[in-house]
Structures are given as C-alpha cells and as structure tokens.
Length: 461
Ligand code: GLY
Ligand code: MN
Ligand code: MN
Figure 1 (cartoon, rainbow, N blue to C red):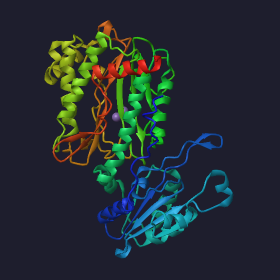
Figure 2: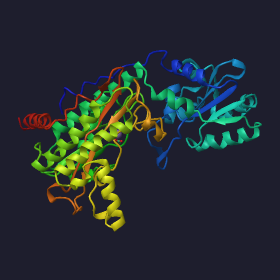
Figure 3: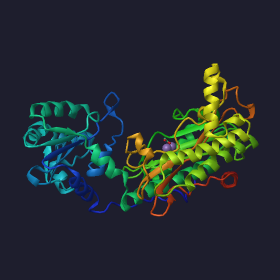
C-alpha cells in the first residue's frame, strides 16, 4: 500500500475545557430544581463470553467523554447548586486483570472532572435522595434496559416529579457544532477521504469486496480513526442497488462499478463518504451517463447550501435535476419532467391500476438527499420536521443523491441495468455559505480515471 497515506497521524486533541463547556451549556437550559440522568450504552455479547467493541452513547460522550459501560451521568441543580455526578464501574483488581483497567470513582473525579462519583451499585440509593427533592427529572428510556428498570421504579416511588426528555436539550446543543467539534469531524473526514483515494488506486478486477473494505478501514485505523462510523459498504455491480449492503462478500468484476460508502470515527465523531468508480479504472459510456447525472445533481444541491436553506429544499434541487436527467436518458417519460407533471402521471397510473409499470424517480432514488451528521452518523435532531428548518452555521449534514437500477428491472433500457451510483460528501454550513469537509476525494470522471491509472502503474511497476 502507499506509504504516503499511512502517516500514522493521530489528529487534533481535545482541549481541557471541551466537556466542561458543554455541561455549562446544558446547565443553562436545565429547569430549576432538576435532576438529569444520562446513561451509558449497554455492552453487547458477540459470542459466548466475548463482546462487541464497546461504543459509548453519544449523549454521555457529548457531556463527559467517559468511555466505559456501566456508567451514568447525573447533572442536577437542586437548590441552585449545579452538580455533576458520575456512576461508574468500581475498581476491581480481579476483573481488571481480565478486562482492562477501569477509571473507578477516583478517576471519574480526577480525570473527568466529576464533583462526585459513586459505584454503579449505588445508583438507586443515591438517586432516590436526589429525585425526592426534584421538581423535574430528565431521563430517556430505551437506551439501556438495565437503567430503565431501576429508574422507572425510582421515579414511580419518588412522588413523581415531572418527567422530561434530556434529548430536548441535548439534541439542540449537538445540532450546532463548536469550532473544536468541527476540527474533530474535519479530521475524521480527512482520514476517510485518504482511505477512499487509497481504495480507488488499489482496486482491481477479481478482488473481493471485503478486501477493499479492509484497505479503507486500515487507513482509518492507522491514522487514528479507530472505529468505523457505521458498517462499511463495498458493493460491486448490482449489489450497489441494495442501499445498506454490508455483506461485502462478492468478487469485483471487470466492467462493473463499485460503490464504497465508508467513514471513520474520530473521538466519537463521524464522517460519511460515498464514491462510486469503475472496477477496471474506465467508465463505460452507459456508466458515465448515469454518473454524470448523479454528480450534476450533487453539485447543484451543494452549491445551493447557505444559511436559511432547508434540507427539504436541498433535496428538491437534487431530485429536480435527477428527474430532468432521467427524462433526457429516456428512463422516465417526458410528462414526468416536473414535480407537478410527475404527480399527475402517477395519479393517472394509480387510477388505471398500472402504477407499478410506470418508471418514476422514486423507483430509482428512494432515499433522502441529506441527514445531519455528528456524534451519530445519522445525527440528531431526530425529528424529521427539522428538514424544514433553516440551516445555520455550525450545522453539518451530508449531500448524497444516488440512482439505482436493479439488474432485473425490465422497465429500463438494458444498458443501464445493474448500475447503482451514489456520491456523498459532508457539508458544514458557514456564515456565508458552506465548506465541503470531504472535498479531497475526487469525484469527476477524469480525476477518478487518472487516480486509478496511476494506481495501476504503481502496481505493475
Ligand atoms: N452510510 C449511511 C448513509 O450514507 O446514510
Ligand atoms: Mn449518509
Ligand atoms: Mn454514507
């Protein structure tokens, strides 16, 4: 592999005030005399007595960075006294010998800045005291069943202070990325971009999809992005028409395209990149026609980003471009060129009982153009109505139009069947427009073919 990309860089470090500053923002939004409880993710079994790599819940990460399971964050302001408590797995020499050093209560205070720390076993006892004095308690059910059960009992027995969702505060805070968060996301994007370039330059017919997956993920890891932000998708040919294809088990065939949707995670922050390129390094004419169309839709949508726009408007721009292009390529009928025309044609076909036979944009572009991105790849806010909110500086989202023509779809010209293309970049909204955080992965036909030709030369030298 190219030594140039295996720099072994580790990326930006966190400032000392990184987490404390978020807790201050959280306290400012907490109602008076409240107790907010934010729990860790559960550890999940992979096989018998081994576990999946643990990923902390994004809310715990946001507020504290505490990395261990079996922990809960409590932020309270009873009587106006702001207090940050951590419940953690206690030190235990025998356990630590097997499964690694724990921070314990002392570490929670010293290294994570907690005002108080308790062993996990005291969760119910300590919280009962706090909740009995609270007017409001904040708790989100469904993250960790172990705590849900304990908390429900406590709340029911407590005289039932008002129950609120901490997400109402956290989702809004997490939606606006601070400068130091942007630096972490930008680094995740930079490392992931390098990984995609490396995959392009190493790709050869006959390789297995999982081999390209390994290339991409090793570049992530070697440069400090030690987890994937989501399961990597490496989909050759018709597999690319399965949106979340992750088996990555097939051979890549000469003449097919390969779609790679993969992003590394850095300090919990995601990146999310898709590129689609020809396995043999040269686009066929039919592939180029579809590729150029998806690219023009993506570029038009990105160009429209500025404060005040909405995700639904950005989606509309991409969808309109795709609809026009599909008419020009003879894949959908001319009356479908506009949104209104398409609506009418579909209505008519539904009335005639022929809707399934009528090719329409939705059949080939069946997902949204954008989602928010941050600590979760599909980040908060989770409310879909935020797609109609004006985007603001500090928001980060993807722009990822695609077209997917299944090999068995007889309604479309044969030359396009089995082609699946998505192009995805991560966009930061700035004061006067936007920044493409993943711009260093090329996406024009010429640039891609040139990288692949250079890669081939390197390997045959
Ligand atoms: N990688 C998942 C997505 O693009 O939304
Ligand atoms: Mn995405
Ligand atoms: Mn993606």
